[in-house]
Amino acid sequence: MAERNISNKELAALIGMHPTSVSRLKTRRTFPKIDEDTLSALSKALKCQPGDLMVYEEDEADG
Image (spheres, rainbow, N blue to C red):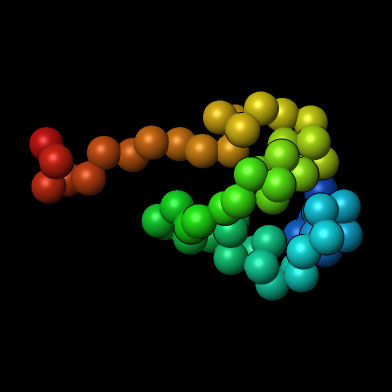
């Protein structure tokens, strides 16, 4: 979102979510359940691919 210069409030309006929900998606360390429609709306609003919204970080316990 920072790269796109869009606020939580603006993104929330574009995808039909509450700004607090957008903030939670952005700040969670674990990946929440996101339905296909929400992921599609986020990708469209941010003009990116779904994979651009996620980063895999290996747990320390995994190796």
